[in-house]
Length: 415
DNA sequence: TCTGGGGTCCTAGGACCC
DNA sequence: TCTGGGGTCCTAGGACCC
Image 1 (tube, rainbow, N blue to C red):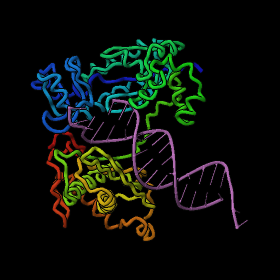
Image 2 (cartoon, chains in turn purple, orange, red):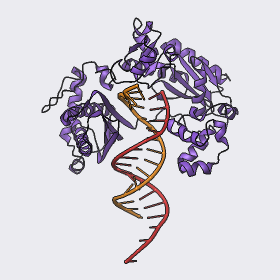
Image 3 (cartoon, rainbow, N blue to C red):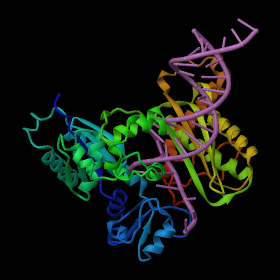
Image 4 (tube, protein in one colour):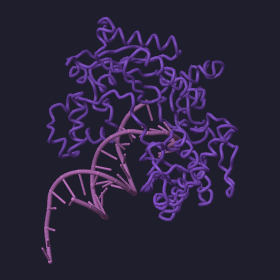
């Protein structure tokens, strides 16, 4: 088998680019631009312009801290729906250019070009990458960088060398030499915790770790994780580029502008979150078995409770009831001011495969046929008249969201 | 410094089954 | 009467990524 030909197409400072395209008179004119988080409230930097990065501003940094480093910077909210739309455009162009495309995140696309040599008239992988880069820029106005190699993890690492607006390909056989120039911290999946633990053992560079035995890693980290690290150091990765990978969970969470103390207030917020994830679930034609509630206390301690029902559910009523039970459990264990509340759904199944819903199944889940019909009717009304068309009958939901339909995924700036 | 929101994957212990 | 080992599912927590 000839070596695989994998590309990773990665948008450069994606949120910054989209903010500028969306608001050319405002964000578009600010070289020092920070996207995400309000200047005063809680929130972090989602992305910063290359000019702002020169001041030490980084993603995930509290925005207040970023503004101390770079006080002249302009801060704008994440243009969420514009980002989703622009990401789809990039994906559409790439799927016209390449046979196998997987969207790995909103701004990253893996391409598997194995077997396209003849189709592309033996063009080099680097020339192909540059052709794709220019075509994406021409048709979507989005600047991307492209990394290439024989495996996903190699393409991923190569992309960092390609930034910004460039191409970098690691040729077959050159992988080990390429990796040997890197720190262990550069490897995807090796984060701050593992980096710290490795450093304690005298391991900082990839080269330092190449002599370490598989058995030593496994004795330290466990069988699976030890084997994973041993392979990662060598750039080994047999994961496929899978264009059809299904979503595994749906969640929505909110950090409050000020901590919430009262159970009633929290339960109001829970209702809004439950409705939001349930609506997303049904829009995607899915049902769910496991509901999780996440509570982050004022001291940043994060706790979760989850419950799995024997049969999949989909209605606002059943999902909210499960979430309410879980929230009350969490609160009874530790009743202190809360800074974040979230609802997550996992164990997803297609609603069309759900089969018939007899009395037996209803007994197991607490969801009735009527609950389902009500939720679908509410969905239909909302899609015609907007999100505020229907409010729950018995409870006045003070947390309901504003009219902007693009806002239903939430943003960090709505408070 | 005072820590977002959307995800994926892994681990470990206990229950349960064979 | 006491005791195996493996597999799967569930739950809680955490690391990591963009």
